[in-house]
Image 1 (cartoon, rainbow, N blue to C red):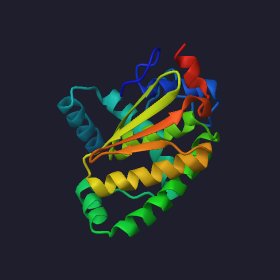
Image 2 (image 1 turned 90 degrees about the vertical axis):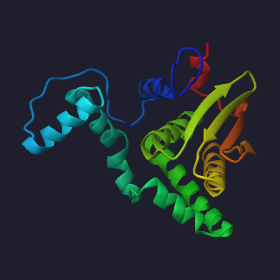
Image 3 (image 1 turned 90 degrees about the horizontal axis):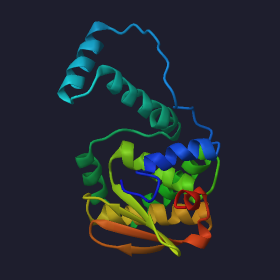
Image 4 (image 1 turned 45 degrees about the horizontal axis):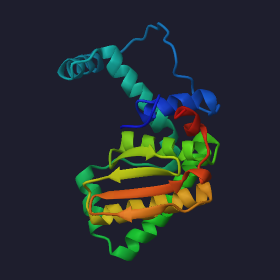
Length: 211
């Protein structure tokens, strides 16, 4: 995911946020040597997967545990379940448009609760960090962020179809409005959404990153 200036990705911004904004998240910096006992069967699977993906067992375990720290341990408090992409799309496509909007409005509340519960701050940094987590671990859309002197532009792309784009539009448009107190300008295409927010309404450490 491309971003600006000193930050190579929003993951960089997320890491900076952890230290600058004093978010209530575990510190992930540095490493410590620990010894753990693993069942042989689990180690065999990890070793095979690491070799297949051109990585090490240590790096694979770190990615698994990072997901648990960043997402799984908190997501279960919101009743998340895991289903395949095809099943999710089929379920969404089977709903009438008004029901999709109803579900999207409920999801906008979840987004607001995510921001409040995970980051304890109602600002654009926390909204983008939530978007980053959803994009990274649920893998239902990808996004980029750009800005100029006047506006911040968030572009979301997904191949889940028109109904999903409308679902995402309502969920994130309402989620941003209730969290930030400003409604973004939205442009909708078949596989893409563009949210535009005025910089004056989104003052945050992102301004510092661009200088």
